[in-house]
Every structure is written in C-alpha cells, then in structure tokens.
Length: 116
Image: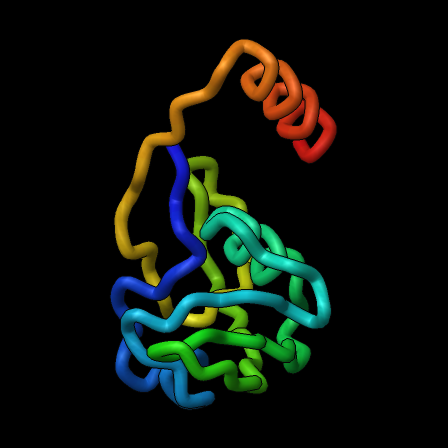
C-alpha cells in the first residue's frame, strides 16, 4: 500500500487550514525535505514541538509555500499516561497499491527497513 502525500480533508480552524492549506493540496517538501508519502508528513509533524514548518505544496499545478505551526494536543493512553502530540489537522486522501518486481521489492524493503 502507498498513500499519496495529499490532503484529503483539512480540519476547519486547524493549523493547516489557518496556514491556507486546502483539500487536494499535495505536499512536495517540508522544511526542504522531499515528501513522497503521507506517512512522512505524519512522522515529521509528530516529531515537531510546535515550531513553524515550511510546507512546499502543489495546488492545481502551481507551487506554493505555506508556514504551518503544528498544535500540540494532549492525549491520554489506556494506561493513564499523558502524551503531547503535534497535529496540523489534515487527513490522507486515500490509498493506492504499488506492484513491484522482485528487484524493486528488495530495494524497497531495504529502504523501508532503514527508514523505520
């Protein structure tokens, strides 16, 4: 499975909406780091401590730069521990499936293992 780095839904009043992001925007870069999957957006935002992030997006063929400041949200896990997580208020647009050859499957597996 593969998830495009595209905003499926943008939460009104959320950090992304406040910065000007709209549903259908595709994230190309965050703070200069190329983005190819929605999971990368989640990962980079989750590691943020509420500081502004520069998003380079594609909207209908035009490239724009938005400054998004994640909001820190407190959640409590089932054990009663409180966690602060950064969120920007977007959801993914859907999921595709990539079919691999044996060689591309091997190289993708190595890359994903290294990334994790």
